[in-house]
Image (cartoon, rainbow, N blue to C red; front, top):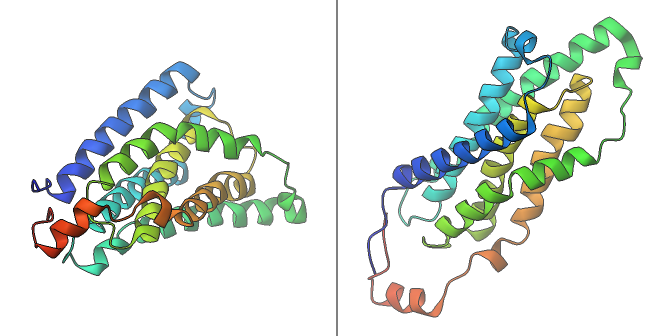
Length: 212
């Protein structure tokens, strides 16, 4: 079998193609009306950067997880950025509670946010799943979850640019929560999506399977 490109090369290809798709989607949908104000807020820019970096590092971790012999710590790469993203959303929630009290916890039903993130992440998700299937499905559930996290995080970042959020608690539940829920749900189907094929097993027995 042919040797696969380095995981970071495949990550760069996927990330650039996904960013192009997200940029086109944002252009078609249109930027949120208050974006010129929000981009002056450090907290908003950090949330946006953390979402993009979570997506990029989750993609890198997914590709690394399909390469035999690579360090296990690489699979944890997206989680510091995911934690940073959550921390700044949480700080926004805390600030709103301090200003408005218990009323800040009022949550409007916005199921459409889940479907918007799922729909916007479809193309990057299909692309990364096609690409990771060329590697070795060593940890199919983890690889699938990381791949979904990569796609949905970029989708959530795009939503920050086009969809005006009413409050930080809404962002926490309907945007960040959707990313986590969709990634966890996808991980459940890891063994169905990523599995050893007969040719791969034969190559593994002969020690000719593609390495990264």
